[in-house]
Amino acid sequence: FGQVDCINGEFVAGTCQRNCLSLPAISGAENVDHCYGLGHGKTCAIRCRAGFTWLDNARCIGGAWEALDLCSSPCYPSDAPGPQAHAPAVLCAEGEVVMHGEDCTYQCDEGYTTNAVAQ
Image 1 (cartoon, rainbow, N blue to C red):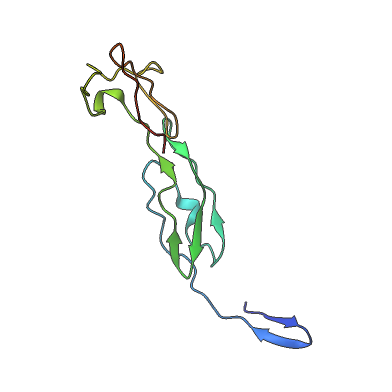
Image 2: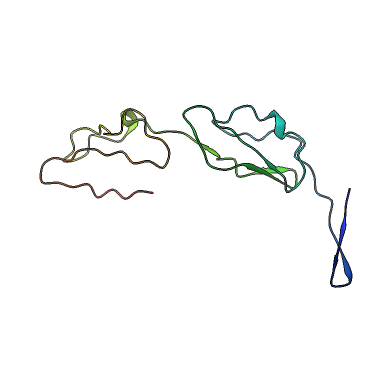
């Protein structure tokens, strides 16, 4: 159904927008079949698989899914750039998996301090 809104004594017409007739392609998300066919402007609740961090829900805009980078993957210290100068190995004090948005604390050689800035 379409609608027109009454604004200050005048009707303002809306437009007919396409529904999302595809599934959002979200890396790290669990089943998103429930998103199929949602209407323009509607959001679809996203659940991330274990180990991924949920950032937001998907939103249908004019038949296309907006913001598909919604499940952020963790970092693994074994994939970190290294060794760094004056830090022989990047071994995170936090463990073998560092979740999105968290820091990895590693040890610099004596007399050195990291200048890394958190994103």
